[in-house]
Image (cartoon, rainbow, N blue to C red; front, side, top):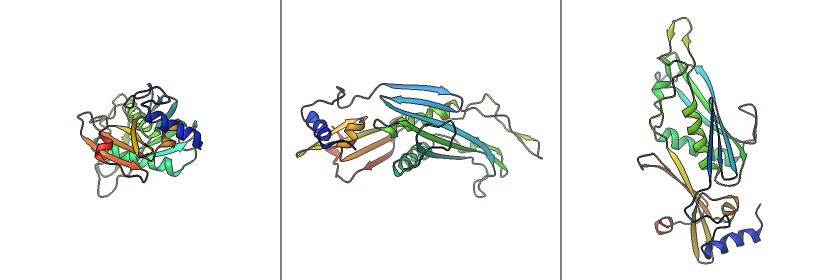
Length: 240
């Protein structure tokens, strides 16, 4: 929990036009992305997020016989397995927003995950592990998930009993229609003013009255707007 002194210091600095990180109000932290088979490692400043994909073959939903499955979960703590780590309301919220951005924007052709109509499809579970939380985990998580999905490769699959082979080979990537991203802003109040900063670190998040996340695709189309926090935010404030 940030101290009142640190919160006041963050807000007072913004009132003077300064961030403690010496970034401009719209400047992002350094981004590092490392790709591995079915996984990715993302560093956004000191925030570190790992995403791993667990793939299995399952029966499709009866009402969607040609569609595969894609789900997201978020845990705090690094692990060598896909499930260890503790869940939290914040982690559940991160997984929900990432799901809305990636699936809601139709970034993936779910029909491409079909192996045999009505009998076998790919079920992809993306496990997000928050290794270090120094603010703006959501943006790092979304980038990590998209990076992991881009590194995913199908494995050879044969439908048992039907001798029907998957159309995908081991080296075929997951067909991604586009790469949506999120960018988050902290709304920090100071006296009667409100300041908006992009890619907030942990201190700025603690000083904020609201966090606004905007999801968009490469064409600039907005596919999600999410706000956490009870303070009202006007369009004029966001336009800063």
